[in-house]
Image (cartoon, rainbow, N blue to C red):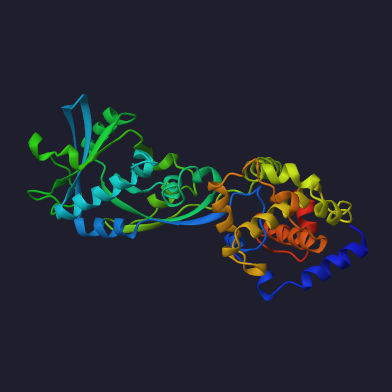
Length: 388
């Protein structure tokens, strides 16, 4: 870029409002509120787990795990059963009703993660249970959200530790990889009053109400020694809290490579703006406005900026100028397909200054996402990393 062009670009940036620039160290997800946007990136969104899950778990009072095998449940034969014994059974039933509601379409049984992690050094095993981040995102934003968004998930999971008994070890051998019935049962006898001991308790078949529980095939049985550092299961296994809830935060997703960003951008622009992209070359104002831009910016930068301006004009209810909520517009684009008869892309009045201004905003958005918003010259840094 020439010195003259850089000077002009700085002037354009200086005309932006107070809310346009972001201070160093700003979280990348704040770029969602930016008037800039890059379709090569999956927007980072915050998904919050249901707070009622932890509340009901605490009220229910889980004091023991019970394992058995049911000869037959409906058409299922030899069904492994992992029953959780609760002192407050009514709260336990409400807890299970809640997690079963997560499994309704568009989600399934994977909406709830359950892991059993054995720690041979301490002769204990832990049960971790909480919402699955991808399906939590799907429940929040609808079908296809796991492909359109990159979640920063904060959800509560419960963690409880029990002695590593021969009952559990035998159950693991027969149940791993199979469909397991997980259900609540009433705590009885001296359950919860004898610490660090495992014992057999006679239980009638009628005491196991499979309708109160759910069948799950993807329960994981893990060994702490084999867990990778930094994973959620590893972090959970390091929490030495018996019976209490733990707040789990999913590690931030990795930064996409320049090649991945390019592929995603090409795919999404074709998906959201097929008519706009096809008709831009025939828009006289666009042709005139881009004459002086093509020697300074890549074609995709100009086209993306044109699409963003057009989208902003289509949804003015999401703000104007520096207060545009591009994430809200992105959500609308996911559910609205352009019609082949749409003529507005031919007549939309593009201006060179507005296009260059939007390109600058899009650059800032991309820089905030892949570089954390740090650095004095976002464009040069992105170019050095191969994103421009």
